[in-house]
Length: 333
Figure 1 (cartoon, rainbow, N blue to C red):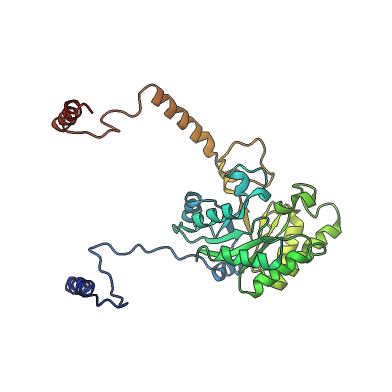
Figure 2: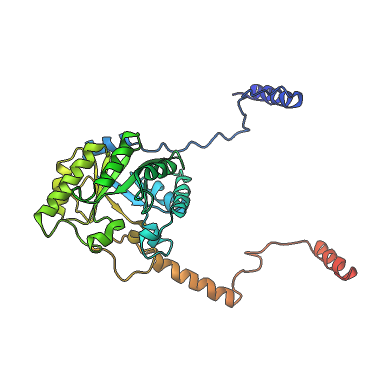
């Protein structure tokens, strides 16, 4: 739009406002010199499936707020998971089952507000959001999906097929309503109590491995577009992956899957921990860098090294300051 057209547009807008003649008309806005920021196009499920069909491994990382979402997006990871693991890694809970639904939604919205990159956003359905009844679960799933157009899919933890008809039916109902679902089998943290703790699945009895395989096949059959498999023997995970036609994202399942997912705080060392799961690769230790900086800040404050006058401070003209003092003293303020 040239400058003459912009001028005419501005004058016309002004006329409409003064004359109450706006009446719902939409007039293009003009900008002086800087255009609108072009946001990166977000990956779609079609994009992820295309990469999967090309045999390129998929990268998925958790994120819990605007800042960590920006890290994942700027790295252009394929998928970004708002995981309920934030209960323990960010919020101080001892288990994912303690996380309130409203608190979880707050973090989903925070993550989705970041648009620094293309990562496809997936959200967990936290414990308690669907177990009470299928109608309640569907209502909560819709509520999650309505939080942001950037949220593309939900992830649902599912127990073994022979024992968990309820969740399988719930997932089927979501898929039939056009809500994209990523299944999650194997070690499912929300069901850790029924599994006897955080243990590897399918490594003691061949029938347990068969049950995992059947569960994965059933999730594909009822409409899941992808599956996460956690903490199972790499040979079993690879066999399941080879016999499915949808992306399989592994965590503690070896490199025979279609991709990998890791918890951000584990892989970047954001918090002190004496033990990390065997499957975690710690790429960095941010905490080791942050702690000395905070200790230095504390020392600088106590020794009056920070803030430094002139470098970190703002000035005022002497005459203005003198008048300020005189006003206070003259009026006994």
